[in-house]
Image (cartoon, rainbow over all chains, first blue to last red; front, side):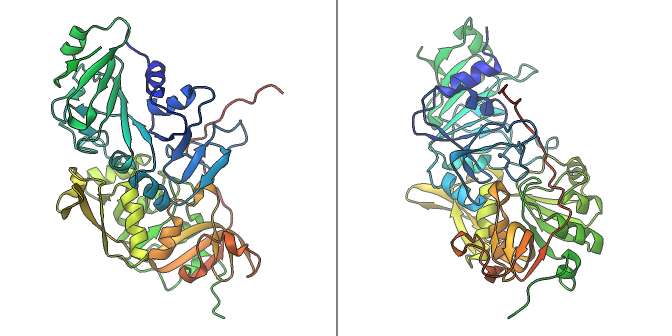
Length: 212
Length: 236
């Protein structure tokens, strides 16, 4: 039984530590906020310019001047602060954020990440992803192990344009957990329930070793 | 004392707008955008604009109305995923586009306003963003050189301002506005509340008035929400 989206978020939440400042990407990474262990002090950063993101507002209380990086309405907490996008990315680029959890289209065995562009098809832009992977201390990727077509997404070399070179520390897919170590060699360290190493080998292009 | 206050957005931009000019527009998504000034640019009909803004509004609101009016020749942005017309114009070759990583865009504007012509950043090294740019090693790490950005005009939105042009932003509506205020050769600010000098707490001012040439009190703010996300109220 492969992990569901919510299971993936719960797996990623195991990377959180007390006192961490964390930036969560759009999609599955956003769900990680629902799995912060009770009693753990984690401060969420929103790269448009906020520390201390609170939950969604109650119905009828949304504030158009208060949104997260995914443009969703949010709320503030007692310890929240606001700042400009330049200050926000100084924080990111300057290595002050402990952990970033992001989605991906491809991760390569050498730690490269592609998650912003499909040439000729998708023209959206990279937003803050390139800055996050270049500046945050630890980069964790959460993604489906394969594309809908079955094509592997953990590949030898990214065919899509890169978001960053040698930037991925840890990869969590619906089939298992991989230490990527920014190019120091991929190690499969955990299997989703009912998933075998052979199944992962068949569905993965990148080389990896196994240390369960 | 120089009078920076103008009656409305059209009066503030009169004599400033020109075809082919470069305009920086504050805001992130639809949050903190200068609604009145964008509408006045739409009304004035200037064309061939290069617009520097993190996003390009949505199809019928924000900078999207300038796209729809065929007024924009080139955009410098970090993310335009909310705008279908944008994608269509770009893929058909009717719109030039330069993508910058969001932090690089913010820093280019900050640097431009601060008189820094270029800087080095790790962001984008080894990607398309670094192509054709100088890459240099500092302390064993690779960095790419990015240029400071300035514009002929910057349009910004603040919550409160005074007649000297001192500005205070609200919550995440601050975003790109403070840097853009510093990087326009001319800066026009619109505010929800315009007060006399002495009415703002001087320790709380985000943008000092030196950067602001003209200030207007905006009207009829729509403040459209792009993605309203809420949770149900728990039973009391």
